[in-house]
Image 1 (cartoon, rainbow, N blue to C red):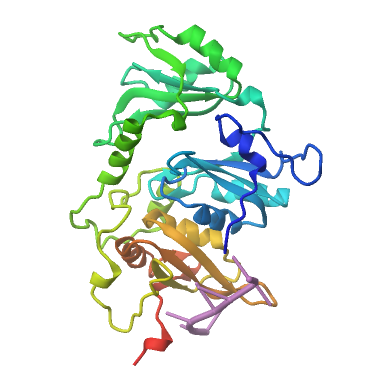
Image 2: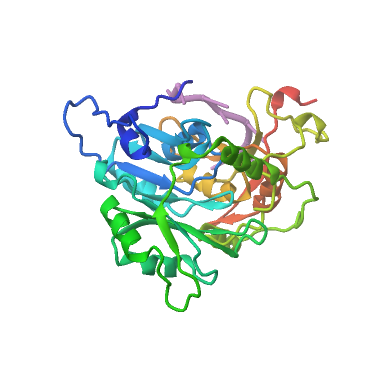
Length: 363
DNA sequence: TACGATT
Protein backbone atom coordinates (compact mmCIF):
# COMPACT_ATOMS: atom_id res chain seq x y z
CA UNK A 1 0.00 0.00 0.00
CA UNK A 2 1.47 3.30 -1.05
CA UNK A 3 0.40 6.35 0.85
CA UNK A 4 -0.84 9.10 -1.35
CA UNK A 5 0.56 12.46 -0.46
CA UNK A 6 -1.34 15.36 -1.83
CA UNK A 7 0.58 18.56 -1.67
CA UNK A 8 -2.30 20.88 -1.04
CA UNK A 9 -0.66 22.10 2.11
CA UNK A 10 2.88 22.35 0.87
CA UNK A 11 3.03 26.10 1.21
CA UNK A 12 2.62 26.00 4.93
CA UNK A 13 4.81 23.01 5.37
CA UNK A 14 7.86 24.66 4.00
CA UNK A 15 9.77 27.86 4.03
CA UNK A 16 11.94 26.81 1.18
CA UNK A 17 11.93 28.07 -2.37
CA UNK A 18 9.57 26.56 -4.86
CA UNK A 19 6.94 25.75 -2.28
CA UNK A 20 3.98 26.98 -4.18
CA UNK A 21 0.55 25.96 -3.03
CA UNK A 22 -1.36 23.68 -5.33
CA UNK A 23 -5.06 24.12 -5.58
CA UNK A 24 -7.13 21.00 -5.40
CA UNK A 25 -9.41 19.70 -8.09
CA UNK A 26 -12.18 22.20 -7.54
CA UNK A 27 -10.28 24.78 -9.54
CA UNK A 28 -10.88 27.39 -6.93
CA UNK A 29 -9.73 28.41 -3.48
CA UNK A 30 -10.91 25.50 -1.37
CA UNK A 31 -12.02 26.42 2.12
CA UNK A 32 -10.01 24.06 4.25
CA UNK A 33 -10.41 26.08 7.40
CA UNK A 34 -12.80 23.59 9.01
CA UNK A 35 -11.11 20.42 7.85
CA UNK A 36 -7.40 21.16 7.77
CA UNK A 37 -5.40 20.53 10.93
CA UNK A 38 -1.83 21.07 11.95
CA UNK A 39 -0.24 18.62 14.33
CA UNK A 40 2.75 19.71 16.39
CA UNK A 41 5.18 18.01 18.78
CA UNK A 42 5.09 14.64 17.07
CA UNK A 43 7.67 12.07 18.14
CA UNK A 44 10.73 12.38 15.92
CA UNK A 45 10.57 8.76 14.82
CA UNK A 46 6.93 8.77 13.74
CA UNK A 47 6.55 7.78 10.11
CA UNK A 48 4.08 8.99 7.51
CA UNK A 49 2.28 5.66 7.80
CA UNK A 50 1.96 5.89 11.57
CA UNK A 51 0.83 9.48 11.25
CA UNK A 52 -1.83 8.52 8.76
CA UNK A 53 -2.89 5.54 10.83
CA UNK A 54 -3.35 7.64 13.97
CA UNK A 55 -5.39 10.38 12.33
CA UNK A 56 -7.15 8.01 9.99
CA UNK A 57 -8.60 6.33 13.07
CA UNK A 58 -10.84 9.39 13.49
CA UNK A 59 -12.34 9.57 10.03
CA UNK A 60 -11.73 9.69 6.33
CA UNK A 61 -8.67 11.71 5.41
CA UNK A 62 -8.62 13.81 2.27
CA UNK A 63 -4.86 14.23 2.50
CA UNK A 64 -2.18 14.19 5.11
CA UNK A 65 1.48 14.97 5.25
CA UNK A 66 4.15 14.47 7.81
CA UNK A 67 6.59 17.28 7.16
CA UNK A 68 10.16 16.16 6.70
CA UNK A 69 13.49 17.81 6.13
CA UNK A 70 14.08 18.23 2.42
CA UNK A 71 17.62 16.93 2.58
CA UNK A 72 17.74 14.32 5.31
CA UNK A 73 14.14 13.17 5.14
CA UNK A 74 14.00 13.41 8.93
CA UNK A 75 10.64 14.26 10.41
CA UNK A 76 10.38 17.85 11.48
CA UNK A 77 7.94 16.83 14.16
CA UNK A 78 4.80 18.26 12.66
CA UNK A 79 2.33 17.55 9.94
CA UNK A 80 -0.98 18.39 8.35
CA UNK A 81 -4.18 16.41 8.15
CA UNK A 82 -7.08 17.42 5.96
CA UNK A 83 -10.28 15.54 6.69
CA UNK A 84 -13.17 15.07 4.32
CA UNK A 85 -15.68 15.87 7.04
CA UNK A 86 -15.31 18.96 9.26
CA UNK A 87 -16.87 16.94 12.10
CA UNK A 88 -13.93 14.55 11.98
CA UNK A 89 -11.50 17.45 12.18
CA UNK A 90 -13.33 18.64 15.27
CA UNK A 91 -13.30 15.12 16.69
CA UNK A 92 -9.57 14.80 16.04
CA UNK A 93 -8.88 17.97 17.99
CA UNK A 94 -11.08 16.82 20.85
CA UNK A 95 -9.70 13.31 21.12
CA UNK A 96 -6.09 13.56 19.96
CA UNK A 97 -4.96 16.98 21.13
CA UNK A 98 -2.84 16.42 24.22
CA UNK A 99 -2.27 12.76 23.43
CA UNK A 100 0.99 11.55 24.91
CA UNK A 101 3.10 9.69 22.40
CA UNK A 102 6.41 8.49 23.76
CA UNK A 103 7.98 11.57 25.30
CA UNK A 104 5.86 14.06 23.38
CA UNK A 105 2.47 15.57 24.03
CA UNK A 106 1.05 16.25 20.61
CA UNK A 107 -0.86 19.39 19.77
CA UNK A 108 -3.73 19.22 17.29
CA UNK A 109 -5.31 22.44 16.09
CA UNK A 110 -6.79 24.01 13.02
CA UNK A 111 -4.17 24.99 10.49
CA UNK A 112 -3.98 28.62 9.58
CA UNK A 113 -4.77 29.44 5.97
CA UNK A 114 -1.71 29.23 3.86
CA UNK A 115 -0.28 32.57 2.84
CA UNK A 116 3.00 34.34 2.33
CA UNK A 117 2.39 36.56 5.35
CA UNK A 118 2.77 33.69 7.82
CA UNK A 119 6.02 32.39 6.39
CA UNK A 120 9.40 32.95 8.02
CA UNK A 121 7.79 34.07 11.25
CA UNK A 122 9.87 31.85 13.52
CA UNK A 123 12.34 33.48 15.88
CA UNK A 124 15.39 32.11 17.65
CA UNK A 125 15.99 33.58 21.07
CA UNK A 126 19.18 33.17 23.06
CA UNK A 127 20.73 34.40 26.31
CA UNK A 128 17.41 34.04 28.05
CA UNK A 129 17.58 34.01 31.84
CA UNK A 130 17.77 30.36 32.90
CA UNK A 131 14.91 31.00 35.31
CA UNK A 132 12.56 32.15 32.57
CA UNK A 133 9.92 29.59 31.67
CA UNK A 134 7.91 29.21 28.49
CA UNK A 135 4.96 31.17 29.78
CA UNK A 136 7.13 34.08 30.87
CA UNK A 137 8.87 34.09 27.51
CA UNK A 138 5.49 34.18 25.77
CA UNK A 139 4.40 37.07 27.95
CA UNK A 140 7.49 38.97 26.93
CA UNK A 141 6.86 38.42 23.24
CA UNK A 142 3.08 38.54 23.16
CA UNK A 143 3.06 42.35 23.02
CA UNK A 144 4.27 42.07 19.42
CA UNK A 145 1.64 39.73 18.09
CA UNK A 146 -0.09 36.40 18.22
CA UNK A 147 2.21 33.57 19.22
CA UNK A 148 1.57 30.29 17.44
CA UNK A 149 4.16 28.11 19.15
CA UNK A 150 6.95 28.61 21.60
CA UNK A 151 9.60 26.45 23.12
CA UNK A 152 12.52 26.70 25.51
CA UNK A 153 15.25 24.14 24.94
CA UNK A 154 16.28 22.18 27.99
CA UNK A 155 19.40 20.43 29.14
CA UNK A 156 19.63 16.94 27.66
CA UNK A 157 20.74 15.35 30.93
CA UNK A 158 18.35 16.85 33.44
CA UNK A 159 15.57 17.16 30.91
CA UNK A 160 14.25 20.27 32.61
CA UNK A 161 16.96 22.89 33.15
CA UNK A 162 16.68 25.68 30.59
CA UNK A 163 19.54 26.12 28.16
CA UNK A 164 18.60 29.76 27.81
CA UNK A 165 17.58 29.42 24.19
CA UNK A 166 14.21 29.02 22.61
CA UNK A 167 11.93 29.56 19.66
CA UNK A 168 8.90 31.76 19.16
CA UNK A 169 6.68 31.47 16.13
CA UNK A 170 4.40 34.41 15.45
CA UNK A 171 1.30 34.32 13.32
CA UNK A 172 2.71 36.88 10.93
CA UNK A 173 6.18 37.68 9.75
CA UNK A 174 5.56 41.37 10.41
CA UNK A 175 4.97 40.56 14.05
CA UNK A 176 8.23 38.65 14.22
CA UNK A 177 10.04 41.59 12.65
CA UNK A 178 8.57 43.93 15.26
CA UNK A 179 9.61 41.59 18.05
CA UNK A 180 13.20 41.63 16.80
CA UNK A 181 13.19 45.42 16.71
CA UNK A 182 11.69 45.64 20.16
CA UNK A 183 13.48 42.88 22.02
CA UNK A 184 16.83 42.07 20.42
CA UNK A 185 19.59 43.29 22.73
CA UNK A 186 17.12 44.18 25.47
CA UNK A 187 17.37 42.99 29.07
CA UNK A 188 14.19 41.35 30.37
CA UNK A 189 13.07 42.65 33.76
CA UNK A 190 15.52 41.44 36.38
CA UNK A 191 17.86 39.81 33.88
CA UNK A 192 21.59 40.38 33.98
CA UNK A 193 22.19 39.86 30.29
CA UNK A 194 20.50 41.17 27.15
CA UNK A 195 18.72 38.61 25.01
CA UNK A 196 19.37 37.96 21.34
CA UNK A 197 16.36 37.72 19.04
CA UNK A 198 16.70 36.81 15.39
CA UNK A 199 14.99 34.83 12.69
CA UNK A 200 15.43 31.11 13.14
CA UNK A 201 17.29 29.14 10.54
CA UNK A 202 15.26 26.83 8.39
CA UNK A 203 16.05 23.20 9.17
CA UNK A 204 17.25 22.62 5.62
CA UNK A 205 19.80 25.40 6.04
CA UNK A 206 21.70 23.39 8.61
CA UNK A 207 25.28 22.71 7.68
CA UNK A 208 26.39 19.17 7.08
CA UNK A 209 28.28 19.28 10.36
CA UNK A 210 25.21 20.42 12.25
CA UNK A 211 23.19 17.64 10.70
CA UNK A 212 25.75 15.05 11.70
CA UNK A 213 25.81 16.43 15.21
CA UNK A 214 22.05 16.32 15.32
CA UNK A 215 21.92 12.77 14.05
CA UNK A 216 24.54 11.74 16.58
CA UNK A 217 22.65 13.34 19.43
CA UNK A 218 19.38 11.74 18.46
CA UNK A 219 20.78 8.26 17.95
CA UNK A 220 23.31 8.18 20.76
CA UNK A 221 20.75 8.27 23.51
CA UNK A 222 20.26 4.54 23.52
CA UNK A 223 20.50 3.48 27.10
CA UNK A 224 21.63 -0.03 27.73
CA UNK A 225 20.85 -0.25 31.43
CA UNK A 226 18.29 -2.63 32.88
CA UNK A 227 14.66 -1.70 33.04
CA UNK A 228 13.41 -0.11 36.21
CA UNK A 229 9.94 -0.35 37.65
CA UNK A 230 9.43 -3.49 35.65
CA UNK A 231 6.64 -4.69 37.89
CA UNK A 232 4.99 -1.35 38.40
CA UNK A 233 1.35 -1.28 37.45
CA UNK A 234 -0.07 1.94 36.17
CA UNK A 235 -3.55 2.87 37.17
CA UNK A 236 -6.02 5.40 35.93
CA UNK A 237 -4.45 8.31 37.76
CA UNK A 238 -0.99 7.81 36.34
CA UNK A 239 -2.38 7.42 32.85
CA UNK A 240 -4.31 10.63 33.24
CA UNK A 241 -1.17 12.36 34.42
CA UNK A 242 0.63 11.14 31.36
CA UNK A 243 -2.17 12.31 29.12
CA UNK A 244 -1.85 15.75 30.61
CA UNK A 245 1.83 16.04 29.95
CA UNK A 246 3.50 14.66 33.05
CA UNK A 247 6.71 13.01 31.99
CA UNK A 248 6.10 9.35 31.30
CA UNK A 249 7.89 7.03 33.71
CA UNK A 250 8.88 5.07 30.65
CA UNK A 251 10.46 7.89 28.73
CA UNK A 252 13.91 6.71 29.72
CA UNK A 253 13.44 3.65 27.57
CA UNK A 254 15.44 3.44 24.36
CA UNK A 255 13.47 4.30 21.28
CA UNK A 256 14.92 1.36 19.44
CA UNK A 257 15.56 -1.74 21.43
CA UNK A 258 18.96 -3.32 20.83
CA UNK A 259 17.29 -6.67 21.50
CA UNK A 260 16.37 -8.44 18.31
CA UNK A 261 13.33 -10.62 17.97
CA UNK A 262 15.50 -13.68 17.46
CA UNK A 263 17.39 -13.13 20.66
CA UNK A 264 14.33 -12.89 22.84
CA UNK A 265 13.52 -15.97 24.82
CA UNK A 266 10.59 -17.74 23.29
CA UNK A 267 7.55 -17.62 25.50
CA UNK A 268 5.51 -20.80 25.77
CA UNK A 269 2.46 -20.73 23.54
CA UNK A 270 3.28 -17.36 22.15
CA UNK A 271 4.06 -17.01 18.53
CA UNK A 272 5.43 -13.72 17.38
CA UNK A 273 4.41 -11.70 14.43
CA UNK A 274 6.39 -12.58 11.37
CA UNK A 275 9.35 -10.60 10.10
CA UNK A 276 7.23 -8.99 7.40
CA UNK A 277 5.14 -7.24 10.06
CA UNK A 278 7.76 -5.59 12.20
CA UNK A 279 6.78 -5.26 15.82
CA UNK A 280 5.02 -7.06 18.59
CA UNK A 281 1.33 -7.74 18.23
CA UNK A 282 -0.73 -7.41 21.37
CA UNK A 283 -4.21 -8.81 21.92
CA UNK A 284 -6.57 -6.61 23.91
CA UNK A 285 -9.74 -8.18 25.19
CA UNK A 286 -12.87 -6.78 26.84
CA UNK A 287 -13.21 -3.53 24.98
CA UNK A 288 -16.67 -1.99 25.01
CA UNK A 289 -18.86 -2.08 21.89
CA UNK A 290 -18.21 1.65 21.54
CA UNK A 291 -14.43 1.36 21.71
CA UNK A 292 -12.53 2.98 18.88
CA UNK A 293 -8.94 3.16 17.71
CA UNK A 294 -8.18 6.31 19.62
CA UNK A 295 -8.70 4.57 22.96
CA UNK A 296 -6.03 2.04 22.01
CA UNK A 297 -3.63 4.84 21.06
CA UNK A 298 -4.38 6.53 24.36
CA UNK A 299 -3.82 3.38 26.38
CA UNK A 300 -0.66 2.08 24.73
CA UNK A 301 0.99 5.27 23.47
CA UNK A 302 2.46 6.17 26.86
CA UNK A 303 4.43 2.93 26.94
CA UNK A 304 6.38 3.43 23.75
CA UNK A 305 6.34 3.24 19.99
CA UNK A 306 2.94 2.11 18.74
CA UNK A 307 2.80 1.55 15.00
CA UNK A 308 -0.71 0.23 14.53
CA UNK A 309 -3.97 -0.23 16.37
CA UNK A 310 -7.10 -2.05 15.29
CA UNK A 311 -10.49 -2.43 16.86
CA UNK A 312 -12.31 -5.47 15.53
CA UNK A 313 -15.88 -4.63 14.68
CA UNK A 314 -18.93 -6.54 13.57
CA UNK A 315 -19.38 -5.76 9.92
CA UNK A 316 -23.11 -5.21 10.11
CA UNK A 317 -23.49 -3.38 13.43
CA UNK A 318 -20.10 -1.64 13.29
CA UNK A 319 -19.80 -2.24 17.03
CA UNK A 320 -16.57 -3.45 18.54
CA UNK A 321 -16.60 -7.21 19.01
CA UNK A 322 -14.87 -6.81 22.33
CA UNK A 323 -11.28 -7.05 21.27
CA UNK A 324 -8.57 -5.39 19.29
CA UNK A 325 -4.89 -5.45 18.44
CA UNK A 326 -1.99 -3.13 19.03
CA UNK A 327 1.41 -3.38 17.38
CA UNK A 328 4.40 -2.01 19.25
CA UNK A 329 7.90 -1.71 17.86
CA UNK A 330 9.95 -2.61 20.90
CA UNK A 331 9.68 -5.73 22.99
CA UNK A 332 10.49 -3.99 26.26
CA UNK A 333 7.81 -1.39 25.77
CA UNK A 334 5.26 -3.98 24.67
CA UNK A 335 6.03 -6.10 27.71
CA UNK A 336 5.67 -3.09 29.97
CA UNK A 337 2.36 -2.16 28.37
CA UNK A 338 1.05 -5.68 28.84
CA UNK A 339 2.23 -5.88 32.44
CA UNK A 340 0.62 -2.54 33.16
CA UNK A 341 -2.60 -2.74 31.20
CA UNK A 342 -3.56 -6.38 31.76
CA UNK A 343 -6.16 -6.12 34.51
CA UNK A 344 -6.54 -2.40 33.95
CA UNK A 345 -10.06 -1.16 34.54
CA UNK A 346 -11.41 0.85 31.64
CA UNK A 347 -14.81 2.20 32.59
CA UNK A 348 -16.60 -0.77 34.08
CA UNK A 349 -14.54 -3.36 32.25
CA UNK A 350 -11.34 -5.10 33.21
CA UNK A 351 -9.04 -5.45 30.24
CA UNK A 352 -7.13 -8.60 29.44
CA UNK A 353 -3.95 -7.83 27.58
CA UNK A 354 -1.37 -10.26 26.28
CA UNK A 355 0.82 -10.94 23.31
CA UNK A 356 -1.25 -12.19 20.44
CA UNK A 357 -1.20 -15.94 20.09
CA UNK A 358 -1.29 -17.84 16.85
CA UNK A 359 -3.49 -20.88 16.48
CA UNK A 360 -1.23 -22.04 13.66
CA UNK A 361 1.71 -22.71 15.87
CA UNK A 362 -0.11 -24.18 18.82
CA UNK A 363 0.81 -27.77 19.73
C1' DT B 1 -18.44 -12.60 24.11
C1' DA B 2 -11.26 -14.45 23.71
C1' DC B 3 -6.88 -13.87 18.94
C1' DG B 4 -8.28 -9.68 12.76
C1' DA B 5 -7.53 -8.08 8.17
C1' DT B 6 -14.39 -4.41 3.69
C1' DT B 7 -7.42 -1.54 2.17
